[in-house]
Length: 426
Image (cartoon, rainbow, N blue to C red):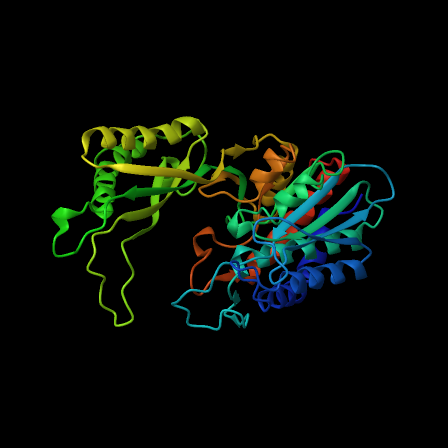
């Protein structure tokens, strides 16, 4: 049996390696949308793992949402078979990052190391976590090349836009189901002392209100779709937001504010665009469009979540002259939560306590991630998220991951994989 302290020391000795791998991944601007540079990043990972004895396959998600010849959705899956039969542990990380945005004080793709932190878009979410998983697995196989079972590592596309060209595509082809895989660890940034069991549900929808166009100087001859949308917003404020805030979950969602149901208005658009001269069109708006983002709890049913909104809209249609609307589903995922006594959750929790000398906290994420596809499509319940990085830094300007956190998380992942493959509980 491999000595666990020796494994930790081996991983700690790869500190420079995990830094350089993280930096090399950050320097690849795999921005989604539109989905840039996926193939280069996938092959960068695959070629490294192939040199270390992994069997590597590349999968383009032909026909998936977003896939095109200009922006192909490439994924990489690497597998290392042990000498004897046993379980398979899979580490899955997404390679895409969100847009840079404004407010940066450093180059978002230079991967600068400043005061023990690696800065850059994707450093925290989640190229640092993916790099830590790779280093953990490499160290484990160096120390114990004769482990039973198998280890897999994947780098997948499009998690930031729903995962349909990544984990969902692979799950539909059996990559995240038994008998191929038994346990999945997704190194999302949820703080290194937390084991994330799952996530809340989400429903995205487009709401349109309609009116009648008229001259802006005579609005009484038209019917403003924007005013109708204003009535919707007023009803949301007076009725729906208070109702949602009163709902609480037993799911250990973090932060605490996310233990209630929430609704965000992602965007609103109405009327005609300003002209070339920057002046507005003198028209009554005949259409207005709103995107709503409803996050819901495991105690709620999706049809009830939708009905709360539709009932409010139907009442407005009865009570408000000229009110017409259309509500279109865009995206929906039910809540997912692995039990805290699942083998993968327990293996990671034990490793956290050994590395950090404190108990792990079991949490649930406020937003969804690719566990939804492993659960819904792969029908594989033994899946959790664990990784380095501070949750609040994800998608922020000056995003960073601490080098110490990378090393600690790599040790946790290495110890957890060892326990799952050998059946050891200590």
